[in-house]
Image (cartoon, rainbow, N blue to C red; front, top):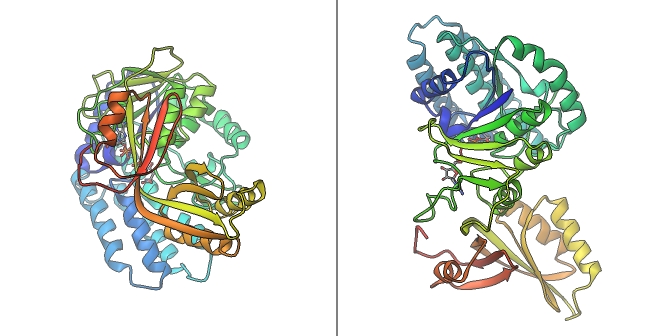
Length: 426
Ligand SMILES: Nc1ncnc2c1ncn2[C@@H]1O[C@H](COP(=O)(O)OP(=O)(O)O)[C@@H](O)[C@H]1O
Ligand SMILES: N[C@@H](CC(=O)OP(=O)(O)O)C(=O)O
């Protein structure tokens, strides 16, 4: 049993849907994959924008119409006959979305309401893919993953209940897969009382890993618009190279530091069950891509990772006292409470500095909570660069001409925070 994951770029338009059919047709007849799909193109961003307007009590009809037209025009391309059942299915999804948006209330929980709106992108794309593949003679089973991927009610970052999820998936999917491939959604899950949750932005890779783990799959393939896992994002860095194979630990660390090609939570469940992860190009399915597995290799070529839009927060005691464990405890508590992840941290005698994503609302909440205890300085927007497996030439090349505000190095990893510069790509 294998799992395939197609992200936003692989379902961005009608041509992309046809390409998925082509890729699935390359499998042997007896091979029935679980296909996990993300929302079309940038639909999740568009839904986020629409939701924010609704939450502020502003008109959202224009962006909603754009989302509708985008889906409608691609569906018209894929299903020229206007009376195909996909049209009704799509209409139902949009009616339900409009209903949900009308019920959005500014005074009610932002995150809970967010999940009910934002999750619709994956429902739309999976319904279209299900109907399109069927229309091409590729019979398949559409599965509502909210009944299988069980999470708690941590809105926008649902924590997976692995036991319940594994029970659900391993009990019901194998018999379905005996007869037909399964098409389901990435990114979304459900609580036991039937509410929809999301797993964190770009979380569809993780969804695919959940299915692969619970089914003890032979492999997971994530189909991307790049030739594989490269040593840097080709949109940000020049002269990238592809890794042919790489160990789980390397990939986990690259994703943790911000290599956005793989969602950071994806690799760990696969590593636990020794399931190989293939990163392949949906434009060149015949090419080998990268395999991430339990392999041994020598030190690999340095990889370069950039996290943009960072904020450097520095906490100083008000009486010039040393930073104590008690101080650290209240800083960590505030960061955890307001769900700000630490991307880098450094302690000195009378100050503690941490680099976090520049999320205004969350940063402000932390500052407000700790304002009585500390003098808090902050700096944004900044860049956080990481070089894994650095050597002297790679370090010199990347730091050249940059104003470094803070740096940190271990034997394998070098990180620094600097102001954004004009030399791009790096
Ligand atoms: N180390 C890397 N190797 C390859 N691609 C990378 C790397 N780091 C970041 N990327 C970016 O990841 C993108 C693909 O991931 P993503 O946009 O999440 O795909 P999708 O949403 O279609 O699943 C590439 O277009 C590339 O710009
Ligand atoms: N659609 C969701 C989930 C996701 O993973 O998308 P993609 O596979 O396109 O990164 C998002 O944009 O956050």
